[in-house]
Length: 460
Image 1 (cartoon, rainbow, N blue to C red):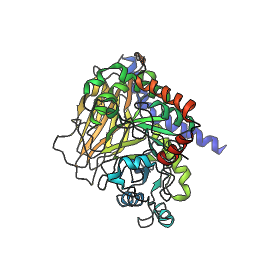
Image 2: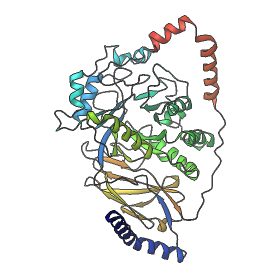
Image 3: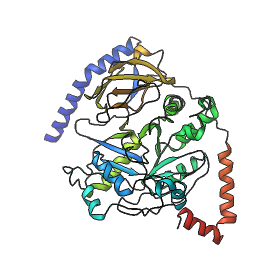
Image 4: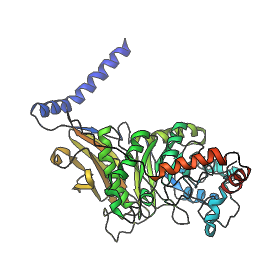
């Protein structure tokens, strides 16, 4: 009986708290005013009790094409205060920082000037236990992300993507501009992927007009339509943001506009893509997660990280910006970074509560248009003529920029028009069919090819 009374009282209090909002919404609707339905990607995150974990989801070692041993890469990220580290060498899934990676010799040979084909030096078992238990860092451990890998090897167009959580891609070079084969396979295995520096594959980095071609945009739109949230994000700022600025300011905006009417809003992601010393902190992500990262809780922590990726409960941080959001001569202080402390959704309003390292905010909508700057609360109804389906804020400060996931914003009762997503297959589809045919009917049982795969590609 007492339990029923408590539930009744709780429900009554909840209704009383919601009455002002409900009354305002009903009044607005009755008056014929515009009322927005807001989809908050951070809905459910408790900013007061959840953990904000600093993560590096893309970094290389000398096991593929970096020039720094695994051991040093891990130690440097531990020193810099990272909570989560995914080593993502080309063609070489991470089996653990304390295990010498089964590297692909051809990848190391291509970058011999970096790797020198030196012996791969993992973290010792003792040191692995210390790092994953937070020894020497006030008990703050660092999580080893399973099976991180950069797929498609060294294909000519750099059509790369990162994968996590499933053992896929060992020694696989890939096919030029074929993103779908690994994305599909990894989804079927239960893993996750995101696309890396897409402009290097499309050629848009050097020729921005490429992104004016609908077929190019539709190629990637169809990938997210079919595989989201396994394929959960697109790289909007990596390295020094040289190649990714156009992916953020043009491609990403076009993908959101095309896909939101279909119920899909891909997340954004940022990472350092470090290959050498001093590049570890160029860009990273901050994940809002419930689980602790202690070694004895690793399975739960990994599952929570996977959820954070798929739900988009994280922020992208970059020290560099080449897309116009920061002055051309901006130099990060390399220490602080802007960050979101809380998000409050009201009637037609989104409020971002920033941390003390933030000194500015801007709100971007369809087409990459900045509709508001300097105000941490945006009233959507004031920008009804500009907003078609989303707003995407970013914060700035002395340490760089913080990209917030997009909020889908659609007036109540409105059905967004679904555009044409027709994709006419490009050369990569036929190249993949040709390669698969050769492998199945000519190479599969060829002893010389088997030796090549084993000793050159690292496939056992």
